[in-house]
Length: 366
Image (cartoon, rainbow, N blue to C red; front, top):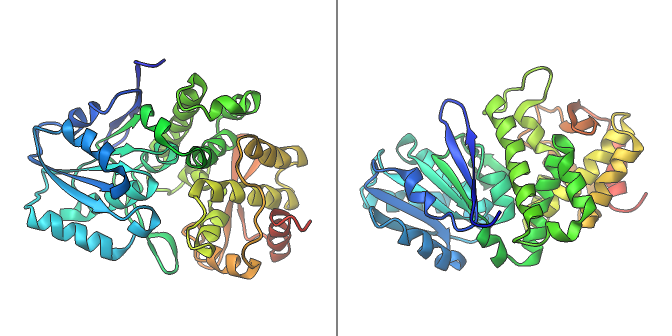
């Protein structure tokens, strides 16, 4: 499939395309269009060489470089304020545009900067990690962190386009590639079991950046997210009893708590893997998920080297963070669970006994 491109359309009030392929950075300018005069390119310093490649294709525009901190430390109010000041000094108007080049944190923060400058300017995302390709870049969620937790400040701002150049996956350290598979495996459990079958059949190919298998996994995971987002952009609920966009948070309630407890030293995809093991056990204890499906979580994740055990924080600390998670309603905890493979549902207010027992399972105590 090398040399070809796949164009995936996201319908809705603000339609756009997600382009997947090798050597497709030229799509960025086409997605920006001829209306903007200025383009701000947001990227972390370690990705300056890739940003240079993107900027080389933007010679029709006046380019402003906005260098963001690398990783989750970029997602603060101070960083946003500094970027807004740069946009103001450069005279950016509502007809100008933003391009993000980076992983999930850059996509989240660059998207937030675009969403809030003059109440919203166009943004094109160039995700550079597997995690960002299948998760952060698609769907229009932007966000930054506060002392209380992850992504508690943000807005919905759909991009003008997303360019997933698979060539950049070959530059990732293997731990980063493995971490990205956490979100891919999640899509297999909530919607597309073929993803799990591909990984379980040959996990080594899932870790090969130029393999046809990894490309199929990327495209399948993006397709899952597109289908969910088109049906429920702002997480108000899906149709036919489906949890809607909230389903994409499978494993995330505990994942975000783990990230905060470890000061974001753990990769997001690794935290999601741990969160899925936790919620699968919670659902099993609550009588919603059978033993076989719960056990399949750990086996599928371990096949590609993702962690399935965590004991580095007190349960009470994690529980307190989960109670202020975005998915909670008032004082009521809510978890996305599986009533069967690809049959997501909501579990509200599980007992503290089950919450604690599920963490003991995750910690390897029981």
